[in-house]
Image (cartoon, rainbow, N blue to C red; front, side):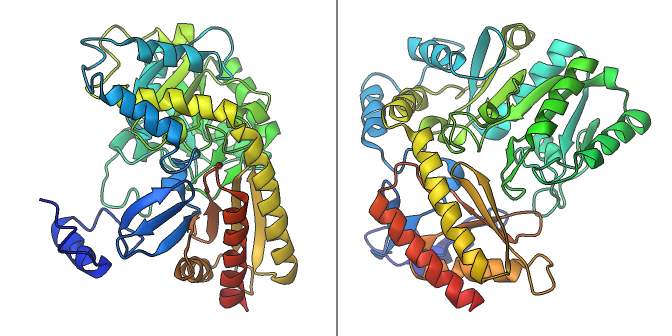
Length: 428
C-alpha cells in the first residue's frame, strides 16, 4: 500500500524505516527522495538538493536521462524478463559486442552480464580459478570489492564491512596498495613475503585491484605499480583483474580507468554507471579466459536483465554523443583547481587528488592526523545548504565527489559555492 499521500513528512518515514528495516542497512540521510532530474533531486517535503553522490557513482549520465528513460520505456513494452539462459535475446549479445570492442583487454574479448558489482567480482574470481586451475587470490589493503561473503573477504577494510561476519573464505591475501605517491617497494616487499610465507605463486589464480580505490579513499594506483603488477602476473601465470565497478564509464576522464596506465588486464569487472541507475554488472576478459567455465557455470536468474541491457545501450550512446569522458576531465580539472585554492588557505585540507572527475579531498587535524569529525562537519554543513556529498577512506577523513558528468555548468558552479560555504563554516 502506498501511504505517501497520508504520510508525507521525512520524520514520519524515518520512524517507519527504523521500525520496518534492520539497522544493518545503514542510511546516511534522514530525508526521502520524491523525484530527480540530472544532477538535482527533491525530497518528499519539496526541498531541493544538488547530487554530488550519484547513488555512489551510478549516475554518470544523471538522474532520468531522457535517452535512458526512453530505452527502458521501449523495452518495457516488449518484455521484461525471460531469463537469458532460458530464452536469450539479441540485445544481450549486441551489448556484449559493443563492450568487447571498447574494453582495454589484449586480443579478442568476451563479456558476461550479472546484476551487481559484488556478483561481477565473484564471477571474475570463478572464471580466474577455472582458467588457471588455481585457488589463491591476492587483493589490497583499503580495497572495496563488495558486501557478499567472498567479495567482502577481498575487501581490505574491516569496519563496517567485516565486523561480525567471519570466518571468511580461505586463500585470500592482502598487501599494501601501491597508490600514486606511495612506496611501491613496500608493496613489493609484502608481495614477496606472501609468496615466501603464505602461498607459492604457482597456486595464485588472480590479483585483483581497483585502478582508483573507491571506498578506500580515491587513491589512484601509480602507473609504475600497474605495470609492475602486469609483469608479475605474466612471470607467474597469474591473471590480473581490474575492478572498474566505480571507475568505469567515463568517471576518470577515460571510458575505463585502465586506459590511463598503459596496462591491459586479463579480466575487468564493471557495474554502477554501466546501466544508468538500473541493475546490471559485467565481467569482460580475454576470450580464452572467459571461455574456461563450462556451460551453466556462469549466469543468474536476473543476470543481464532486459530493462537494464536496454539502459546500458543508451548509456553507451550518451557517453559517445555527449563526450562524457572528456567532460569528466574538464569538470575534474575545474574541481581540483577550486579545491587546491581552498587548500592554500586552509592547511587542514591535507590533500586534493584524483583522476578525471574521480576527485577526493582529505582532511586532518592540526597535528596532521586523519580527522573524521572535521570531514563529517564539512559534509553536514554542505547538506544543510542542499549539497549531497559522500565520505570515504580507511579513517573516514576523505570527501569524494561523484556528481553526474551531465551536470549543467550553472548547477556545478552553484555546488562549488555551497562547498566553499561549508568549508568556511567547518574550518573557519
